[in-house]
Image (cartoon, rainbow, N blue to C red; front, top):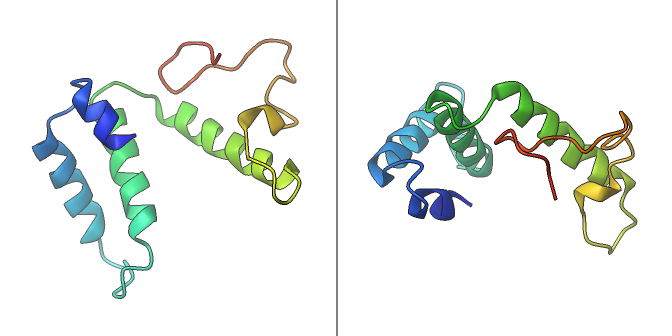
Length: 103
């Protein structure tokens, strides 16, 4: 996703590298690198929010939706947002982090 967003021109690779480096060097990060994925996600989220591409609340809502979908998905089946039991509970499709309705 990061490479795709970069290739679409949403940010320069140097911006991405700086954002990831900042996350990797935050105090309290795992010395063994076991939280590298968390750093990657935080760096991308922060970059998208700071550049005005995404909204922090929308990112958090989407994160929660993926978690609910994972919990509701039977073992061995693919995790899809459609599996989130609350995703469409308000009678309309939710919006993506980019402010457009999900397909």
